[in-house]
Amino acid sequence: MNLRKLAETIELSMDIPDVDKKVAAKLILRLEKLVKKLDAFNKHLNVLYNPFKEHQTVSEESVVKYRGSLWKYLNQINENFDELRQMAVLCIKDLKHFSSDTEITEIISTFTDDFGDIEKQEDNLTHIIADWEAGDFRNKVITGMENLKKEIAELKKLIEDRMIDHINSNILSKSWLDGASEKYNLDISEQEPSISRLYKDREEKLKKMM
Image (tube, rainbow, N blue to C red; front, side):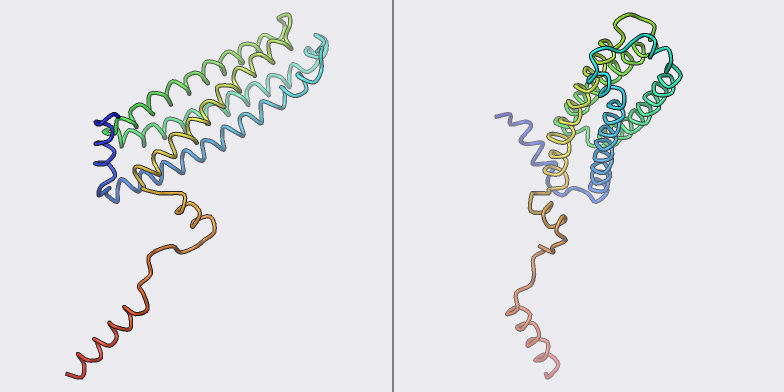
């Protein structure tokens, strides 16, 4: 057992200031939006990936014919990635607010590396599509996109399985019960027992009579 991490977790979970909770709540929203943006980015890749994957051959003539559309598609990929990068930077900025937690420090490092891998594969795919006159264009595009999709899946897994879970459990102190109550709009806050209310009412009436 890593006693240092245990001690830090206990210390971090005790008396979390409201300002830290607000930052954590905002960070959760940022991460959830980033996941949705990653899904949208991946879905846009399918616009070219699916037809290339379904057809065994893509003629050079068809590539030349639709090269204008390829350039527009490539520009959109770059724009989508720029938006992803901006969102990732904001997430890291909020994560650094909790950098005294060694788990968060490790998460920042892994998140930065994983996003860097996406950037490398996106840049590689950009060069592949831009070089549409090169031989074996179809297979290169498919390989480039599959490598990029793999890195996207890795980052999504990190965010959903580790980052959000750690923030909810160790900073916001949320459990599955909190999540269920929010989903179904149920109030699970502790209610004062009826007998206690009756007792207090009786005490108040006796005080007024004295």
